[in-house]
Figure 1 (cartoon, rainbow, N blue to C red):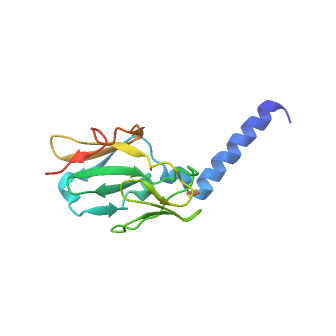
Figure 2 (cartoon, helix red, strand yellow):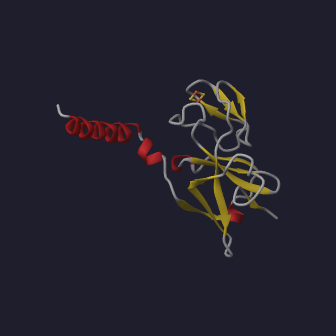
Length: 147
Ligand code: FES
């Protein structure tokens, strides 16, 4: 098999693997309008956007979006039911706090945060193509202010 044929065959296998695992369907990238800010009134973890690749977390005065992929092996999808106090990585039983900090297990780095904004009509958008740099989680667009 020539090098070019090998690369084409490899790409085909990778596409098949992603579609078999559902990874391709669960890793949306780009801006996603998620709804009216008022509809996210309950504090804590909200997992309704897990298939789009992120958790929503509402604190006392802010709303932010955390990546649903582990920072130990970035292809590992995290778990956490709405209202849960921890986010779990089932691959190596790691735990993350709702601010994204690793609490248990091999991950050393916080979960990524995605840019989140609210427009003049109150519609919230999460942009999964824009990660917030470490150390900038206390400034826009790392969160949307509530109240
Ligand atoms: S892949 Fe998540 S803890 Fe190892």
